[in-house]
Length: 458
Ligand SMILES: Nc1ncnc2c1ncn2[C@@H]1O[C@H](COP(=O)(O)OP(=O)(O)OP(=O)(O)O)[C@@H](O)[C@H]1O
Ligand SMILES: [Mg+2]
Image 1 (cartoon, protein in one colour):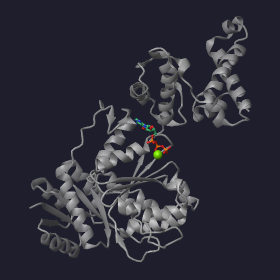
Image 2: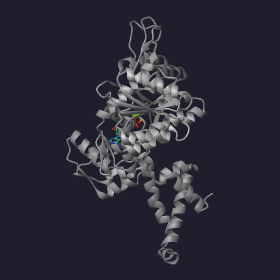
Image 3: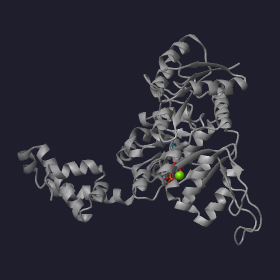
Image 4: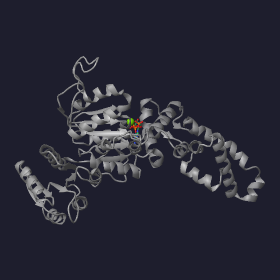
């Protein structure tokens, strides 16, 4: 008999849960405060803890932290008041299995309890160490990626909705697939849909289905993706593009776990894991009134940021190796290496198109390369880069006008002058756009801004 500990300061809630879970065949203990719960956990084996968040003395979120210190694999379900999505986010970040909002439905709580208890006995993800170089097909071993692998393996087995955000080409879809592959519904469908690719009227019926005659062209009943994915995961890509109407409908599905087909009157129960992705700043969209805040909180129970490649350049060599292998096999060419100068060029580049761009660079490099090693000439970086190169060369000659000057002023001064002139030139060329100038010079926007101040460039 699985053992459950219920922690709540309210007697009525403890009794309600005890009676309910007793009836389901669990052995239920109760505690009225966090400190006595900790004592019980230290001396007794539990399979699950259900805890209220708001309690006098130590609150539920601190208790959650303590429990995870004592036994990190013990699942904990938090009970939150309806109006506190922030708490839910904190709870999931601290490793809660899931949260239930008050007032809750009996069958909802039983379902979550069951899946929490079965997860504890089935979760087996490979351990992630600093040696880890790839995870579920995602390549990289920078600190940033290791953190992501850890987060994925902790949240994947829970039913929590996840919002993946990050720039285009950073690997959001790979992350979504990894979450599904490590979830308890991995044997069920993973249904992706790119929200921006479909006009509103069609998207509605794609997502929720329609009944015969609902609109011209609806010649028969049709299931929507939510029904098709039932029991599995729906991956809503580019969620920032959803129109207000679809946002409202989606919110309903997330809240009620049921939907109506377009033109239909019957309610249909759906049970799907939602994974969403966006390359927009949704918080900005909320402020601008283009995205519903309540929907955001429902989707982003666990937010997961995939950083741009320029913030994790340490991943470049591993990615290069991976893509070299992939494309030389695919094109049946024997290009397995890259010259160290070509690698240096790749490490200095900023990748506005992120991993997708690096992947394309290597693919093209292999196609263009006739030797066994990729040389810098075979790398076609985006045009900004090329312009940058020509500027570098010509400007270098302008700055050091004579050898005498170099001797008189010393290297530092000459280099500073060169730097200043290059920046001025880049700003003129880009009509004073610091963003474009930074790209041209292959330095970050911040460092450009710093140098503009330092050299007092007008
Ligand atoms: N860490 C990685 N390891 C291996 N391949 C990667 C990695 N990140 C991205 N890729 C590859 O780069 C390409 C883009 O990745 P993906 O489609 O997941 O990006 P995205 O963040 O969803 O982009 P967008 O916002 O444009 O949809 C894919 O071909 C993917 O396989
Ligand atoms: Mg994508």
